Length: 195
Ligand code: SAH
Image (cartoon, rainbow, N blue to C red; front, side, top):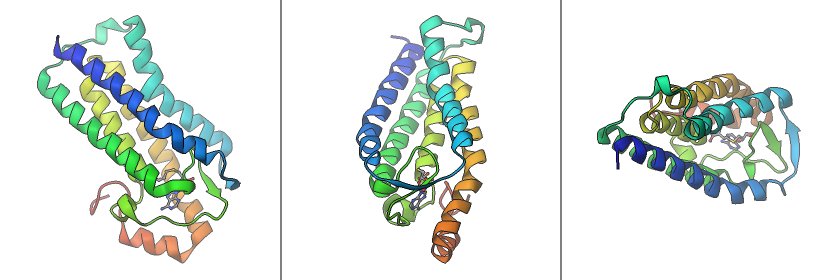
């Protein structure tokens, strides 16, 4: 089996794992009432962009082979790095879902009896779930042997992250005031101690 084929398989298995991890939390979240929803249409667009870059574009390329002109061959070193990043991403994704519990939502929302989570992976950084998305997009770039499919995830996550992050932190500061401000002083966004 060529490294390029292994890369595609690893990517596909990771996508399935991602849905398996998220499903029970998304189900539970439906039972928790939302008190306030922020930027509903902006959020819909951002989620659609993320879905396109991390899922739809790679699947279209895998299914159709287009654009074949942007294909290249992978080596096993790239696949190994990609698989390791994928593993780290899925671990962080699962941990952040566990730690965030009922406060989780796909778009920006304040839930009924919402509390700031500062425990678990949220002690290290404020946005571990978004950090896991960055790791996923990076893994995709190493695993898919086509320039469009490899880079679409990074572009999508950059758009989602940089558009949403200020709104999210402003929403949480409005909701929790000094508690969230203190948490912001103590932690970085996605890279411990750096950013
Ligand atoms: N940005 C976080 C959470 C993503 S889920 C992360 O990357 O891990 C998005 C929802 O999480 C938002 O609607 C917001 O209400 C909630 N949220 C974000 N940080 C939170 C925190 N520290 N405590 C509680 N809820 C939080």
